[in-house]
Structures are given as structure tokens and as C-alpha cells.
Image (cartoon, rainbow over all chains, first blue to last red; front, top):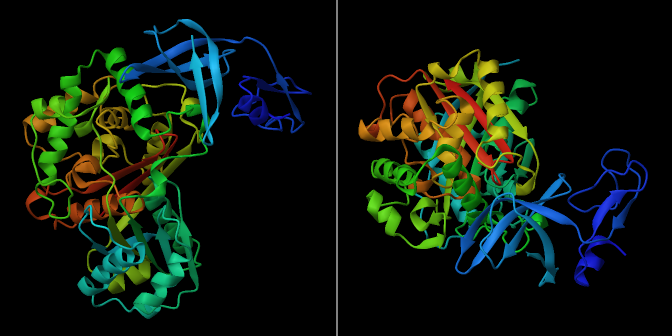
Length: 102
Length: 369
């Protein structure tokens, strides 16, 4: 299964090169360094909040994972920069990725 | 490298009107030919169209509509800096000797698909530009102890300057209080902090040195070009309070022109949102890091139009494919002393800064008499 198949099932995975072990983000089937195939790492990955703002009652946060890549995720509670978080929910809705952290 | 000059231009007003993309392109190009009757359009070697519109084959369509059969005709899309990318392509065609005269026409509709980069899934459900702008604003304010009131001055200044530009979308001036009381889009962004999508077109004609001198007595030369793309995705920006691509592009352009930033008399800066103006001024070296707002306040208080004389994107509106071309036209007008009641005193060197997608890509041009 590829990253999007897993995401559709609500699973957050991280693509890693099968050869040089580089984390590849945005998700891709191939490594951008050695051009070999990637595989998906599963797990409860921790992320760090880099910055955030708020719209209506929801916060949207730039979150960094594995000191390597960042994405924007929503959060219900007030975040703090540097706070360690985990993915609570994720998926694809009407073709758009979504990530929620806690 | 062969010299390349700008020898003619045409603009439409930027509006919220529902116009066909082909009509906008035709209007601005027609304006160019109407006001530059000495131009023999049969000598145009290339027609480049700058747009994010989904319509196809627009350069061939435009060529047919204005009665040209160019050797080279194609469209160029690079989100918000499509315009200056097209000018760089035109420059390259001419400086390489592939073309002597190139027409660049940029156009966009108010509902441009280029406003949202669908590919950038790292933004999750927060793909609209207001979200990256909010993150930049929050980060910049926090890093440099800048208040919401401070940032509002960018919008106040640029709407004020736009009142002297008859083609600008903005027809009103605003106070700091107006900006702060405008609709709250996010905790860190108000409606009046934003440039607005609109319909509009801008055309420019570039020529080789020999042809430039035949066409006009006052060509404006493109003496410096710098470009840098650091990524496509917003979250690849390492810093959220500075513009890396702009810094690199600015340094390259000034080096090519053999100029330093203190020699630049007038500049068009890509103020897609209020926070972009101080960030860009700092990246280009107009001010020290964290001091961009001091410069903006000083310019505003002294009514000095050096930065964004036509009103910037906030005052003019932002028809993506036309913006970079329109910015360039403004610098040409300023250097030719034909910018009417927004004319600066005797500028010799001008700069254009045009960027895309949260400053992941920037183009900087240096223009001289």
C-alpha cells in the first residue's frame, strides 16, 4: 500500500528509503537522493509545534516530525511552540489531506 | 550577453469584473499597440502569455487576435510570479539571439485557479494562502516584537498610494483602525491585510539593444535578473519570519547589475499580505533584519512613494499572471518620469520583486535608464 492508501484508512505513516534510509517528504515512492524505492514506517510518531495560529475555535499548527519534515495540522486545545504532540486523526476528505494532533 | 530593453507597455484597470481571459489579454495588448504606434508588430518574434488560467493555447490565440504570426508562442505559469518568469524568458530569447522582439502579456481572472496550490498536501486542509500568511505574521510579530497595529501600516500606506494609480482596484484610503477592525480571517490576519484576487492584464514589449534604439528614445534596460526556488511546499520554508528565496534572488540580481541595494531608488515589492512587505525589504537588504517596519513607517509618515508607488498588490489587486508585468511597467514608468502624480524624483535604478507560494520562489529584476 502507498502513503495515500494508508492515510485513507486513517493511518499516518512515514516514507523511508529502503536503501539509504532517508525520510522522504512529501510522500513519494522514490528516494530523491539514491532513487531507490521507499517503504512506509508505521508508529505513533511524536511531532513538535513550530508555530501556530487560530481560525474560529480551531488552532492550525506547523508541526515538525523526526526533526525532518513539517505539515499543518489542526488542534482543539491551545498549543504552545515547542509542545510535543501526536497525530490524533488523519485521512483524506474530498481529495484533501487532513491531520489532527493532540 | 546581449542587452535587452523594455520599449513599450499597456495596462488594463484591475477590477472585479467578470471578463473572459482572452478579452483581458486582448485589451492590454491592444493598449500597448495603441500607445506605441511606431511598433511594427510584424517584427515580433515571440509572444509569451503569463497566466494561471486553465484555458489552452492562449499565446496562439492572442497572436491571432492581434494579427501576429510569431516564430515562438507559448504560455508560462508559475503561480504569482508567472509575470516576471515570462519577462525572464523573453530576456533569454533576446539575449541568446533567438528573438529580437518579444511581447509578454499577463492576464488573470478574479477566480484564478492559481490562488490555491492543490499539490501541497503538507498544508493539510489549510491550503488557502491566508493560512501561510497567518503563520508568517504570527512568527514575524513574535520574533521582532511587532504589533498588529505596526503591520497595519503596510495596508494603510499601500491603499493610500493606490489612490494615485487609476488602474488600481482600491478606490479608498484606510486608517490603522480600519485595518484592525476589518474582518478577522484568522487570529493573525485581517481582511485589509490581504491583497485581493481580481481581473486584469498587463503587456510589455522587450527588444534587443539595436531594435530598442530604433523603437524608442528612452528604452529601460534590464540589467539584473535573479531567481531562486527553494521548494514548492510551504512547510519546506525553514524560517517562517524571513524569505530565503528572495534573499538569494536579490543578491543574484544586484550582482548581475553590478549595483548595491542603496543605489536602488524605487522598488515594487510583492506585498501579497501585509507581513510580506517588511519580510521582503529585509531579505533584499533595504533594511536590517527585523527593521523592515521602521523603514515602512518612515516612508509612510514622510509620504515617500519609494516602495510600491503604484500601491502594491494590496492596493492594486493581484491578478496573478499580470502582477509581475504590471510591477515591471510601474518601474519603467518611474524611470521614464511618466508616473504622473506618483512620480518619484529622478530615479535612476529600479527593482521588481515578485514571488510565489509563500516565498518558496522569487524573481528579482533590476531596471535602469
